[in-house]
Image (tube, rainbow, N blue to C red; front, side, top):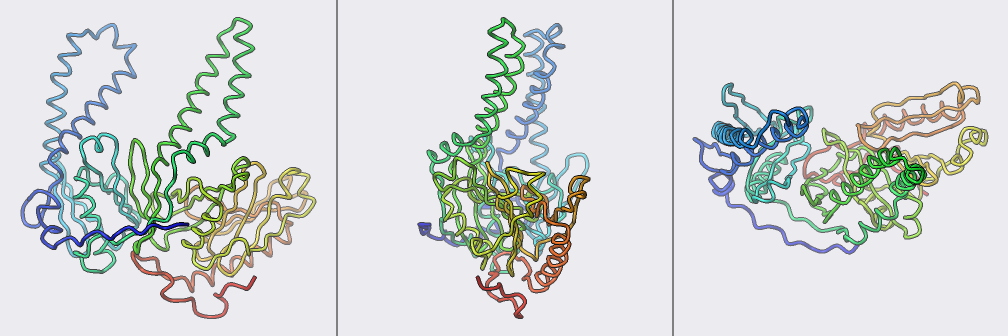
Length: 466
C-alpha cells in the first residue's frame, strides 16, 4: 500500500463540544437536532403516503381526480410538516457522564439511555435527502440495542462529526475535548477499477445470457411470454450491479487509533468505523476472471447489529493480505498449511474437492473452497462461538462429515467440508481446545485500545513457526 498521511483535525474547544455548536440550546445541558429536521421528517411522511398511493393507483384511479389530488396535497403537506415540527420540538439530547440521554415523543414521552460502554460503533450516514440539505444521521451500534432506538436524525455534518468524536472519546476514557483521532489513508478505490470488477463478474453475465436464451426463441415464434419473464431478470441484474456500484463508489479505507474507518457511497454516503477487536471472521474472495489481474475482495463479520462490512471491494491480493495482517496481527495466511478432503469426497464434489482445504495455526482456523469463485475464510480461535459436526445420508454412507465453526451473523461461514469422519472428530476436539486457549488469552475489545499493547502470555498462545 502507498499510505497518504492525512493531517489530524484540530481539537474541538470544550465550549464548542458541549454548547450550541453541537445543537441549539434546549435547557440545561440539552441540545436539539438541526432546525431543518422538521422539513426532512415531513417529507418522509409525504413520500410514504405517495408510495402507498402509487402501489394502489389502479384501485384509486376511478375515484382520484386532479382536484381531489390537489386538495389532498394541500391537507397532507401542512399535516406532515406539523408532525415534523412537533417531533423536532419534543426531541432533545444531552451527554451525561457515561451515557447519551435522548428524550422524544409528542403524546408519550420516551427517554432513551445509550450507554457509552456498550458502544460498538458510531456511524455518520448521509442519505440522499440529507446530502441535498447538508445534514447527516448519527447511527449508534450498541450491544443488545435496537436499531430504531439508536439514531439521531438530523444533525449538520459538523455537528455529527463533533458529537461522534466526543462520544468516542468518552467511551475510550480520554479527554472529551480531544477531538477526532487522526487517520491515515490506506486504500482508495478508483472508479474505473470498480466498474471493471463489476464487468468481470460472471453472475450478471450468466443471468443476461439466460434471459436472452429464454426470450429470443419465444419472440421469434411471435410470443411475448419470454419477454415478460426476461424483464424481471434484467431488472434484477440492473439492481444488483447498480447497488454494488453505488455502495462502493468513492470507497476510502483509513487507519486510526479507534479502528479502521470506511467511507463510501453514491446515493447514501456512509462513514463508519470497525473498532479494534470487533472482527469476528474474514473472507478473501477471488472470482475466476479477477485472478488474471490478481484482484481480491475482503469481507468481514463484525460484532454488533451491523454484522458485516466490506473492507476491500476490489484490490490487489497483496493489499488484501496486508489488510488481513492489520486487522488480525500476527496472521500469515500463506503460511497456514491446508489439507484437502480424502479422495472419496470426489464422489460428491468431483470438480471442487481438490480445491477445498482447511488448516490452522496458533491464531486462526482457515478454510478454502470454490473453483469459479475461490473463497478463503478464516476465524480467530478466540472468536469461535460454537462448533458442530454435520452429516447427511450421503456423507454418512461415505464416512464423511463437515465441521462448522460458528461466528456472529454475516457473510462469512467457516466450514471444513467433506472431511473423513475420524479426521472431522479429531478436528472438532482440537479446535475446541484451540478456542478455549484463545478465549483465555484474548484481550478485551475496547475502543481506541491497541491490541498489540500486551502480547498473549504462555507458549500455547504463540503461533507456530512456518
